[in-house]
Image 1 (cartoon, one colour):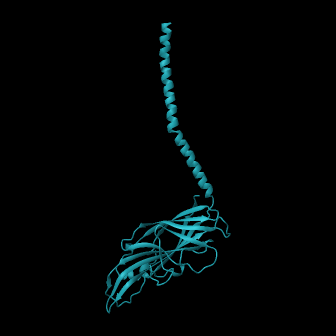
Image 2 (image 1 turned 90 degrees about the vertical axis):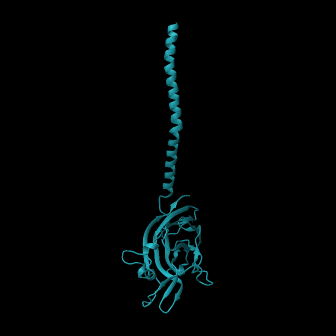
Image 3 (image 1 turned 180 degrees about the vertical axis):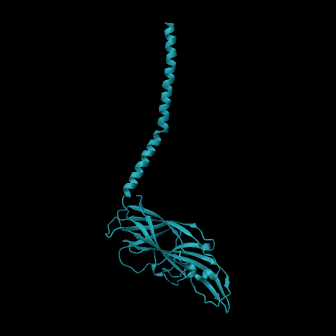
Length: 280
């Protein structure tokens, strides 16, 4: 009988050890692999929901037009010299939102539009850059902040964000940020680099001074010194209260394959593919 009990105890110990190991293995799997499984499952559900929301493109930006030139502020002219107090470069930007349908519906009609998170991703070596809302009527014209006396068409600085009024009735007043809700007019901005050159005297005035991009060359400013890249996000809410956003990246053009701002000005029409993704 004693031998049987001893033999039973010897068999029981390995069985207990195996049971403890099995329970430990189950606990390890529950606490380490189940969260991964559920996270993977939730991620797949999130991806599927995002894909379902974005099965078609409602809004996109397929075209951006840019106009770049230069001008001076506070110029002093003498008989044989010309002093530049503030040489500035500017690029006017027209962003065309596409509603991707000839038919207007609640889905592709603008209710709210906001520009947010403006960033200078590559700063110019010379000057101080800033982004402004610019009245459509002043597009491709030299304009500094508060330059127009007693006018509502002065530049509007963009600090943290810029909200647009959306309208359906025809208007010619674009002095404040406004967009037709059928995407008929572009978002118009102006990127200005002030004080590219200050207190600089052009001694050779035998060649007439022209107030455009050629001033950069006359003031010995390399185009590479004003190279810039900017980005920002545009948020849209439609009349179904669905929310969309897109991030826009722009390399400010001061030259292309054939000419540069040294020639006076440069106009560039960019074909883009910035898609608005629905997130709510």
